Image 1 (cartoon, rainbow, N blue to C red):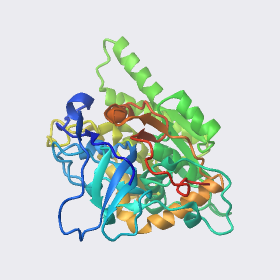
Image 2: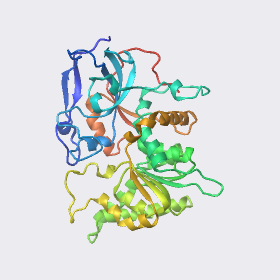
Image 3: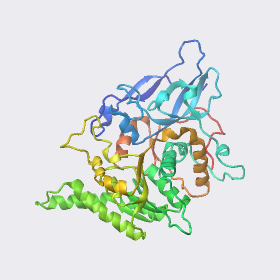
Image 4: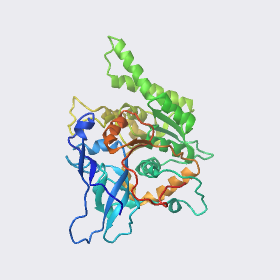
Length: 421
C-alpha cells in the first residue's frame, strides 16, 4: 500500500446558489481526515480511492439547486458531486480490482470533490484498455493522457454520441437525398465540438456551429473543419446591447432584439451552405437561440435538448407566474409550427444509455483512430482548491474544450495503465 497522507482537501456545498456561484461562499475548501476502512464484518468489498482528475460540467449547477432533477440535489454540507478518475490505493474484501487500477465513477457513492474516498468496489468501473476498445487489426500508434477518459471516452463524448445519434437520428446522404443540415450551439464546448465532428466526419452532414468568439468560430471552421458555417453569438449580443444603450428611444426588450438579430444570422448561415432549414438541432443553450432555431426546422426535424446553459444560474426553485415567464419558456410560441412540421423535441440524460456505454466507447475510440474525431488537449487546472473557480469559468466561457481539474499525482506506479492510441 502506498504512503498516504493523514489529511485531505475537500470541497463541500455550503449554500445553494440562487443566481451566480460565489466560490468561497457556496463551495468552500476544507481540510479533513483521510477516511479509513470501517471496523465491521468486512464482507462488503471496499476500495480506497485517490483522486487524480475531476471533470467540470454544466450539470453541476443543477445539482447544487434544490429543484427537481434526474439526480437528487447534493445535500448541504455534503461533498460536491462530480465525475472523476481515481487510482485504487487500498482494497478490502473480495473484488477484481487491484491496487494501482485506474477507475472512473459518476459522483454518487464515490463522492467527487475530495482527494480520498472509500466506496463500494461495485460503484466504480475500471477504465478500458485500448486493446479492449479497438479491433485486433487496429494499431495503437501513439499515447494519450488518462484525461481522455473524462473527455472523448467519458461522459462528455458519450453525451455527444447518444444525444446526436440516438436522439438526433442522423441519416447518411444518398444519391437521392442531400446531406442533412445540423445546428449545434455551444459548438466550441467539450460536448458541442464532438457533436460537430461526428455530424460532419461520420455522417457527412452540413454543420452550422454557434460559438462565443471569433477565435472559437475559426477553430471550428478552419482548424477542426467540422463546421461549414459559424455564428459568433457573443459579438452579435454585444452589438445589440451597444445599440440599445446608445438609443434613448430603444424600449424593446433585449431578449426580443437578440432573437431578431440571431434569426438574421441564422438565415445568413443557411444561405451560406445553400440550405433553407434545419434537420437536426443539438441544443446546449436554450433561451433565444433555441427559440429561433425552432422557427427554422425542416419537416420531421429532430431537436436534442442536451442543456440550457443560458438559464443554469436562474433560481429554478421559484414558480413561474403569468407576468414573469422565463425566457427559455418563450420557445413555445413556435408550438404550432412544431406540430405542423411533425418535429420531435426530446431531452435526454446520458445515464439512460449506460448499458450501451461499451459499444459507444468502441465507436468513439475508432473514430479518434481514424481521425474523424480529433483529440484536443483538455483545459486542465491544477489543484482541487481551484475547482470552484473553474466551474465559474465554465459558465463565462473562459475555457477551451473540456475543463478538468487535476487533483493529485499518482501514488502507485503501473506501466500498463497509460492510455495508448
